[in-house]
Length: 272
Image (cartoon, rainbow, N blue to C red; front, side):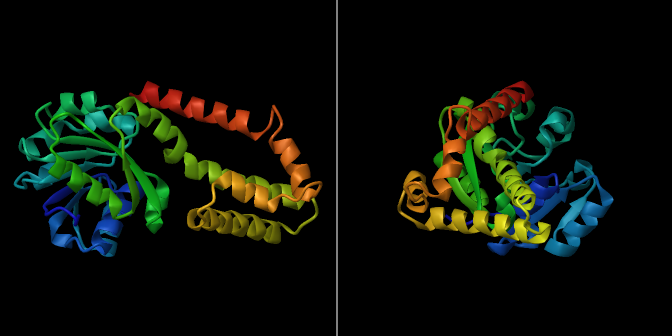
C-alpha cells in the first residue's frame, strides 16, 4: 500500500521524527503535504533545509490545517501536557499515530476522543537507515483502511508487524525499541575486551563493529535460525566454544538479558 494522502502533521522533529520524515520523503510524499511542529529553532531550520517541509514552533501556526493524519513523535513524559492544541486541528476521521513509548491507547483516546482512529506504534532507531522494525496496535474503531495507512507510514522506514494485545507493547519496547542500544553496547564491550587483550584501540573497534554488522546481515539473509548459525561458527574444543562456555553458563548472557528486558518493560509500564 502506498503512503496515505496528505496533509500530515508531524508533532516532534527529533531523531525518530526526522527518521520517519526522511523515509516519507524518500518514498515520494510531497514536502507540501507535511507540516512539522518542532519547538527547537535549530532543529526546525535543519528540517526545512533537509526535507523541504514547513516547520513551525507551535500547533497554532497550523490552525487552518485539517490534517488527515497526526503523527505524535514527542517524548512520553511530555505527551499529555503537549497534546491539548492538537485535538482541535483534526476531525473525527483524522488518524492519530503515536510512537510515544508507553502511552496507551486509553491515554490517547482520553486526549483525542475514543471515536478517533488511533494507532500506537513502537519503531526503533535503525529506521534512520531504512532498517527499522515497528510494531503497531490499533484501537477498536480504527478501520482496516486506516490501519493500512498507519502501516504504510512506518513501512517507509523498515519492517512492520501488528499485535492485538496492547499489553505486549511493553515487551516490544524492551526488546526492539531499546534493542539497538544493547547491540551498540555489545560493540563497545567487544572492542574494550579486544583492547585489553592487546589490540590497538582503533583496530579493536573496527573488528567489533564490522563483526556485528556482518553477523547481523548474515542472520538477515540466512534461512538458518540463529542457534544454527552460532553452532556453525563453533568447532568442538575450539576457541569459540571456550568463550561460549562462559556466555552460556547459568550466570551468563541469557539471565543478564532477561533482567535487562524485564527492567525496560517495567519502566514502560510505569510510563503508561
